[in-house]
Image 1 (spheres, rainbow over the protein chains, first blue to last red):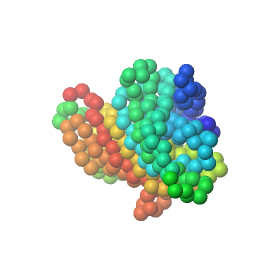
Image 2 (image 1 turned 45 degrees about the vertical axis):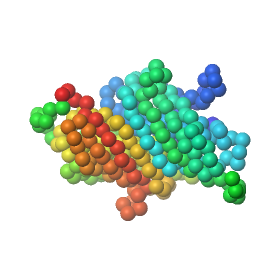
Image 3 (image 1 turned 180 degrees about the horizontal axis):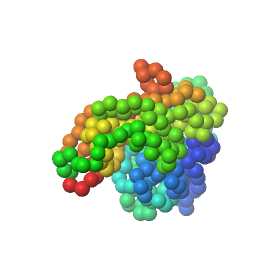
Image 4 (image 1 turned 30 degrees about the horizontal axis):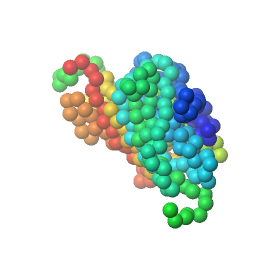
Length: 135
Length: 148
């Protein structure tokens, strides 16, 4: 998991594991260092976890390829409810994986999968190391 | 939301950031006060190797920049209203225009450009020294969560 080796991911304490379906899930434990308004995670920490889940899931899917460099183009985060002082987890779905662009959606959850905390939509550029080939 | 001014005193961005930087997530990433005016604020994110996305390149991760932009756009609303009122981020979009240069502090400026009774609309830009060469552009909305 390349993207979990980054200094930022270590500073934030993102931990990656597989769930029963083999899906990559990132977890961030509660720590006052991640706090925003009293009793809740900061939106920036939630967004950071969502972006990391998107990058890690994408890197995972590209592991058997030429491992392109992953560069974020943009992210839109919708915050639906506050994340309380307990572990926050996130997983991501690759909606489309092209040669140059990947569209990824990440979801952050605490207890009930039906009530997500926040969702991030990301457009990510893939810089292929190999020469451009006709698709 | 009440339309009446609430007796909570004027919002002081300098004191606010001093307090916020002592603990919590803003403390972890180390944001500092830079400047403010009516309806806008500017913060500074000092370069920090613990916040880079890749130790080999030294490029700052996107997460800390997003955190600063969330904070500074929030502050722009309190500066427009003149008072601190509870609010929640509904959404925030960040366009990552280019990587910030390794070793350079990143400045984030946020502006509240429109407000209704329940929603504030914000925008902002981040740069690493030259405002004419931004590293990120943001747009977002906040909902006022105080008692009606």
